[in-house]
Length: 167
Image 1 (cartoon, rainbow, N blue to C red):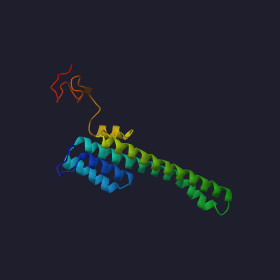
Image 2: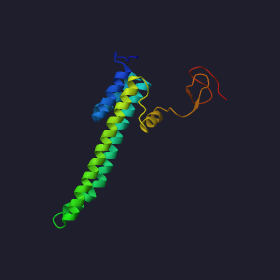
Image 3: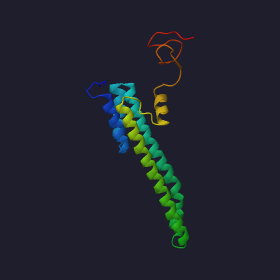
Image 4: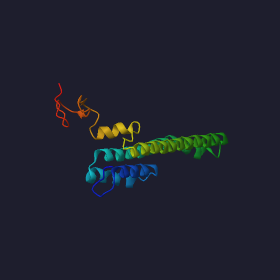
């Protein structure tokens, strides 16, 4: 296992990032990601930290969208609950549905984090759906051709790793 400048393995950094994502510790996760990008400068570990940040961001975005959709019904319910009990019961059912959706999102995050940690422990990419594409885009990976000799991604007509010239 490769170690960073401070003697900690990159796998450990990536697992810590996923655990921070699991517990929703956004500030600590952003600081760890900034540390990985600026100080350690390891592409693989930084990508894993970016995927953890993306997972927390996606969870927050979904939660906020649910809250925004729930607010109009709550506002109307405050004014009508004294006059119309049937709307009040509709509002309570509506709240329970949104609570259920939030819980499903939280469970999905837990499952994705566990799958990501299992991949990271094998020193593979966390491979979180959609978010891994974002991390690849952030690092400029994914565009270009593959080198037929070494398999690395080539931008342009010359492979930097093995020296193969592409047509």
